[in-house]
Amino acid sequence: MAATTPQERLRIALELAETGEQMVRQRLRREQPHLSEDELEKAVVTWRLHRPRAPHGDHPGPRSNRDLGR
Image (cartoon, rainbow, N blue to C red; front, side):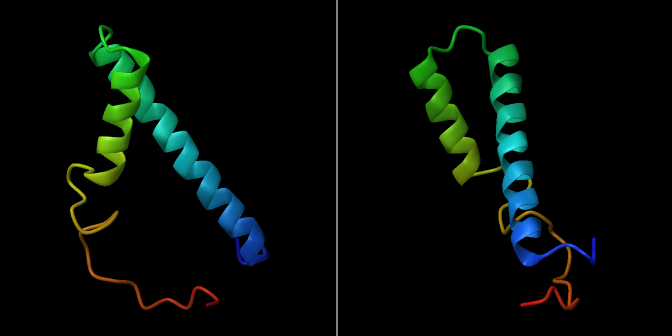
């Protein structure tokens, strides 16, 4: 991955975020088939804002001190 540009890494990250949201949407449809599209969208927004098991970000461990090319 070191050969990728910052733009490519951003594109990959955004694609992964979109895929994750699609997975959450599918899980919610499976678990709560009675939800309307509006209710489903509210549930996805709620998940996005208050994700369980990640109250302070995506990983509970210590911050990495790797150089990410910033």
